[in-house]
Image (cartoon, rainbow over all chains, first blue to last red; front, side, top):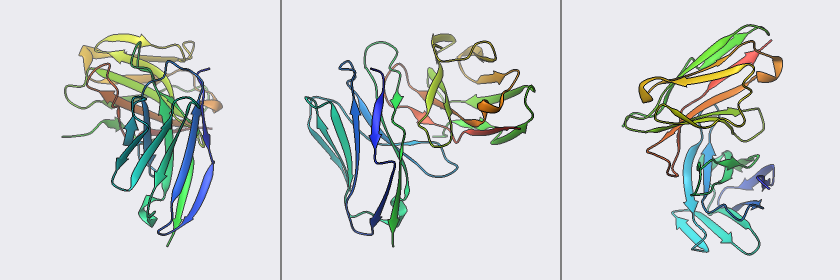
Length: 113
Length: 113
């Protein structure tokens, strides 16, 4: 029940295309869902995050869509650029308790120029 | 604002040897986390500190791993003795408190031969 399932494992997108990464969770106590971006040799960096009181959050080219009833959330990268090539991790946490993050397994995104 | 600092960046040791990693969190951040990231997987929380105290160490292999946070600032993570399966990147993260946004350091890549 603590798992966060992420798909796809890898993704290749043409420059200017839309990249979509999906995550699903089981624990209904989760109420905070961040996405992290990680470049090789670097630590993960917070990209965007959402709470279940909204169904969508947009920051620039990055959008999180959240479906509370399905217990799923996804990251959409619009107008994907080669500089977006990185590994993306979704995570889930509960704002009560220890706020421990449960990370997905990651999606390696490659945007072709 | 300086980010989370970690050292060393890389370490190669033989199995059964010991190793220690150091982390300096963002100034003023009371909560500190150590994660283990095995190649191709998402980060897994090993231990979480709130100031000097341990909040969660449920996934820390206590027979070989230990961690401390002196004076509620810097932290060290030690492995003794190391096993081949400990080869991973060890990430340190910090946050202002038991809130959500966690900021990660660059990690220490450990190779156990």
